Image (cartoon, rainbow, N blue to C red; front, side, top):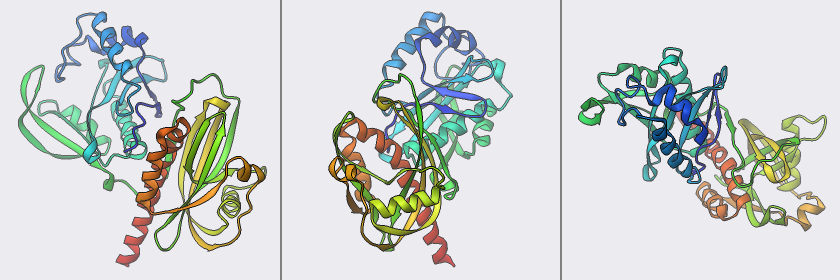
Length: 364
């Protein structure tokens, strides 16, 4: 599980972001004080804005916890905050979460809640790495179930007298989605923030081509770097890759980078997706294009002088489990955490693609 916490998610009509104390007035007015909104919820309507502000103060204090996931829904068209969606219970030992949500009555019936739920589910599956996402509703509140259905969850059954809300003890209808339900060939599209250094400004974008490389024996190949620079002193694991040169297409760039850093020729199997992230310390926005590449042959590396003298680049050959463990181990540094947040979802997706390919080959 990749404990990246609450990060910004953007959908077609919504921005899902962390709460701020300043959201208290709108939250109280738009939904927290409405007894119709809270009718089937487990918490009562707020009696004053002070109650809302006190709650937000508590929530905001938890955002430093990578296992805390709680978003406010901001409607792009007006900039107003209109609802809340969060993980109400995280089950780390089985990589699962129970999710809850509520929204201003003024925005009911426009498909906004399923849109928000889809965005959060994608984040929890792809970035956090959960295997199961579930939610429940009072049997007398079928509209909430339709939200889950539209977001791709499947109804699993009813637990009789299993819950208690503002109306008393109730039967709970459970819906869930698991990772296996998803298309293993769909491309990732992830946007991450730099939560290690404060944001000041961004003055340049960098288009990057990166690869998850594997061989026919099931091993994966990475680069090991030893840095001691503005980011601090750190030993890191990272996928091979680098900046795309002027006039160069992405596939040409990744083949060149792999030849230089790992000394390998590859077949590009597929594109895994794009991860957008930032390095606030150097005011840079990265657009990382990830490919899955099968190694065809090994040869000599052609490392740049700074890669040898400054970063001491070397090759790591690992099983999937060893690689995950190494990324987790390197979270001890700030840069290591940023890299792990970016690359663990990609590595997980790569294994899904490989497993799906092998499964289909075996069946055929």
